[in-house]
Length: 164
Image (cartoon, rainbow, N blue to C red; front, side, top):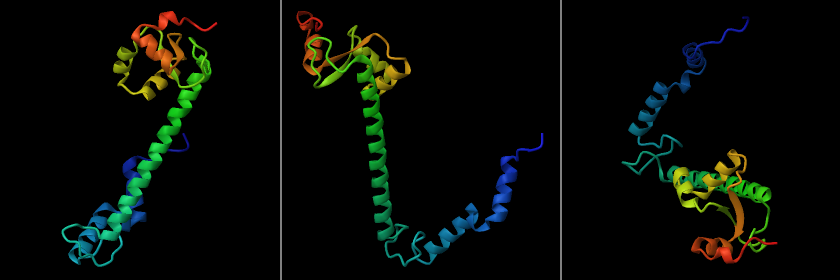
């Protein structure tokens, strides 16, 4: 075997030798030095906001970055959920099996065991969508419009019957 894999200890020792200023101990020493000098450890500017360690400007920047990151994560999650929902609607057909409507479509458990299934998965519809895709679109689901799904839940869907 020509290429030998280095152990983590060896790689970390090489890294510390190459970048001594990035070592955790030296970082902590610099941090304590800035605090002792009453300066912000992030921007190195004078800091009058004792006992808070970072200055007001750095706190605002940190808060803004955190909000932006949360917003980006929420957008990614929303996009993934929409893609899963679209894949499911495409597979099961984009119309209500009772009335043929294409508006306000929902995924329905044919056997009326949706509550138990959601509890098993943890409650969210996104988890149901993931489960359906992961399990190769089982035949125990159908697409209903919101009014037909409500009527089926209330027990009056038998009068509707499947669309012809």
